[in-house]
Image 1 (spheres, one colour):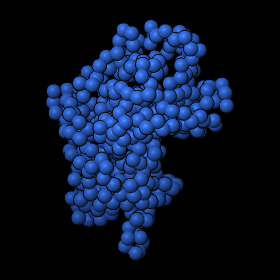
Image 2: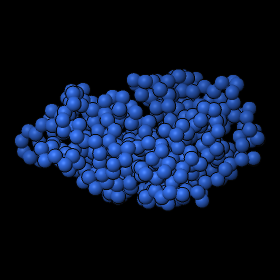
Image 3: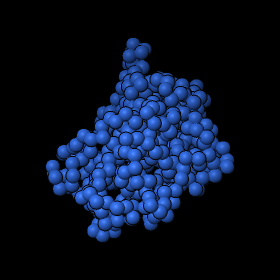
Image 4: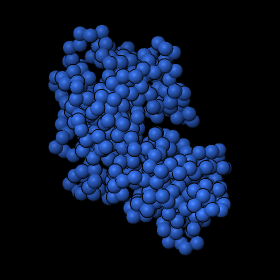
Length: 398
């Protein structure tokens, strides 16, 4: 964690960049779990006056919170030079693949063109442009990704991204659902392979309904961390479900090795109540007769877990330890990732690479007002008392 982290100062400060072009464009993708902190760090790069214009699209429909948007566009000045920074949060694994292999992503059109305006919207942008990616945020190292080569240009370690397990919302308080308060690595490994009876997790032989994992697709760093932390195997195929349908009548669909493309979408689905009494479509097929009642667990970044919990989902502890900043800092809670900022190897020494360095420095120093890494959604490296040698390692105290 420490060997690759370094401070970007002096000539790498955007305040002293000599920029002769009319504008510099930076295209960023990657981690959905870290987008809250990324939003604040990017905003902090811009001059105070004139104020940066921000367009946030595909934000949470309930809160219309710009930090939750899938598409973000920032248009303003940095050190007096014109910068347009665009993000499309596609997932950590997708981000690593994009910068390593030259794959493109879609970004909004410029603010003021194509119907794109400043503000926060739940809808997707009306106009998008496909282009190469300059910078990617990832919740895991490229060495433990699905795209190990070609290597990224630069790799900054910038913070800690915590995750939680939550159980899906219910109407009322079914007694068996209330008994599900903690999960262990071995229980989760069984559930990730296609579900398990609730009794495995509660110890009560009467709890015969099945518990499934509702998870992310294989472009997600949250998924990589979940599979690494449980020792399931990052590349081992999972058998997950997706949850859809109206509140009161959720439908569980076997997604196999696939899953949701967004942590926000997964979080919202965990708030659909009624699974305790609704048809278990998976067991109905397997057993050849109607089976009613089922439950779901999901792995989420802390920011997305708030969305799920606000909708009625409930956090469960992991191996007897509840997620908390203190437990992560001391290495007692293991479900966290080390956030990386990676650059496209084709950039070399460029304004985009320098921007990535300044962005990394904002996280590492974490002295902006307000603080970018608030200690809840993200934790500064300098505040950690524990270290993971790799994504696959248990945390050890420094």
